[in-house]
Image (tube, rainbow, N blue to C red):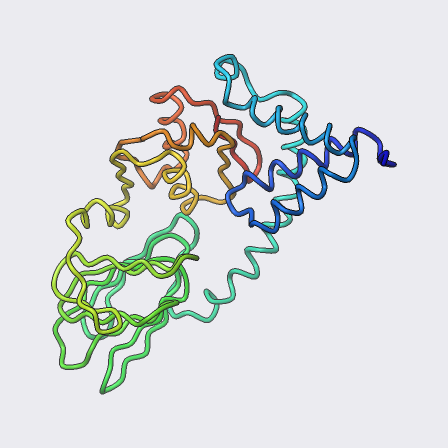
Length: 285
């Protein structure tokens, strides 16, 4: 069945699909919808093939390393980035709900250290929120969003951290809790802590994994895709890497969180990467 849409509209739609599918949060349903879209007509299939080729050209070929993103794709990404400004503004407002209700919170890229009434210290990571409720029987804090490092003091009352999953308890211990889509990530550095009654073992690389409290990100042979996903937590906007092979590139180094953009510049220089910067969007290839 021929398409009734002009080729330019189909091309734009096809590029929209590529951005969605490679932005890092596409679902199986999204991919199924894309396949159905491709099968609507031969013109749809042709536009999809062209968009996929343009996207691959951002990093799969040696010649792509020596030149900027194709002008057509760059123009389309610019338009998408402009719409992202509005979308992210709305999303940020919705995301701020737990922050408004929390006792303590940090903005994107900000860290904050505080001392609780019992003398325990808490360091909040980027875009994090914490509520505190102490009683005569329990010291309870709720991690509403983000990540926090807890340095708890000895006290007859248990120190309980509630996030998305099972509560974490730790007395005279140093541990971090991070809320993330796949479930809470709990890391014990010193002392004793439990999750759902199960004792945690101290992580041998705890100092490296909690280096963010000192304003550093440390990576030792981590895939570039994971490094960029971690960096994304400390700045506004998205970082997209369309080349899956490039995303597996192992990266090592110590980077300064107080200048997250320097991390991308360092990666460009050290690993020969190219980055196209747009409002609220960076494409690495």
